[in-house]
Length: 333
Image (cartoon, rainbow, N blue to C red; front, side):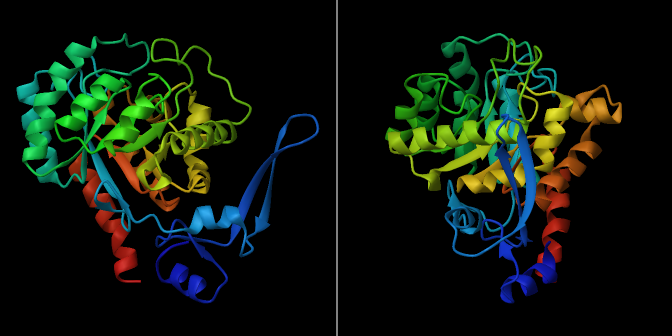
């Protein structure tokens, strides 16, 4: 629940806030393994005082200098010739800079700049080429006052991007793809978004399997959060992303979107990227990624209703409108 009803319920002690935000809940769904190894779910009223409740309800204050009291929009800047979403239209760094500045003007809170496509079937890119693509764009965006995230899975690229002003590392391997990436983030003091991916981009859509996607992804990300803490990265510097479309079928993606609120239980900010994804195209019958804006906004609204704080999108202006309307219920409630 949200708006005035949520505030009244929280004040009355019959509901609890999601991550200290304006959304509230009264029950929890518990996912457990039974004696046969099957996953069973049951609904239970929430009781105060449990450790798991604290992880869910505790306020997430600031992430990379941005206030998490309201949803953040992360605008995508793909400096790649083979992006699934835009077909490489911003592959040239000069064009990417123009695009980045336009996303700032459109209301992006964070710019996510990447130089290697991680679409299904994509091949790796040389580190030198990756840095040549993104570093001029990062410099220009930071000079324009943007909070910048670097979308990379390589420690060397992470360090170079942070040296050029990036504040966040957004890693599709959750700092598990390069043995030096945990140290790169810990030592530089950067924030990090840990994303789940089953397999690698080259093979991740080759028959992905889960017992239950939300259950398996939650436990995998919990292990990565613990690895970060062991390396010296506190939870306050971590966000988690279930990785819609990364080693998942449409059924897995929809189940993850429905249960994305589960990931608040990791005690971190939650990010999600549903923008223009193939699951939207398959369900709505829209072939071209650029034509999936309406489906993206509906999926974003679902994520907003689950308290997700960071929304990675291509169409920043449209997302800004959606979030403004979403916020209005709390401003006037």
